[in-house]
Length: 75
Image (cartoon, rainbow, N blue to C red; front, side, top):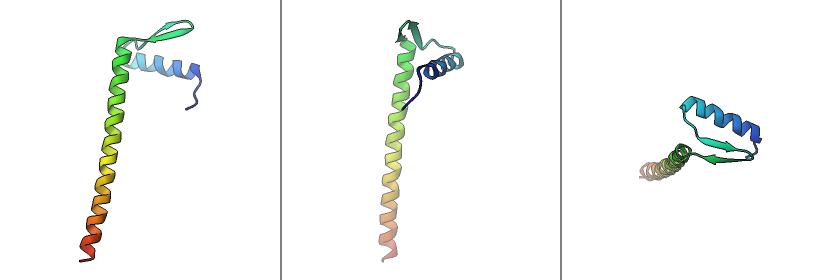
């Protein structure tokens, strides 16, 4: 993923404003993720993992249904 640092900063500030939370603390030239930022990152990671698991589940169901319908058609 290619994105400029100012674009990332703008997105973080926008998210902080929307959530009314401080997600990072800026200490030039570094930044530190706050405890709330860590919790948000953990939450997002969990959602991403659950989404991937659910998509895999749906793909397996689709494959199973195809095989089942194929068997039923051939009977």
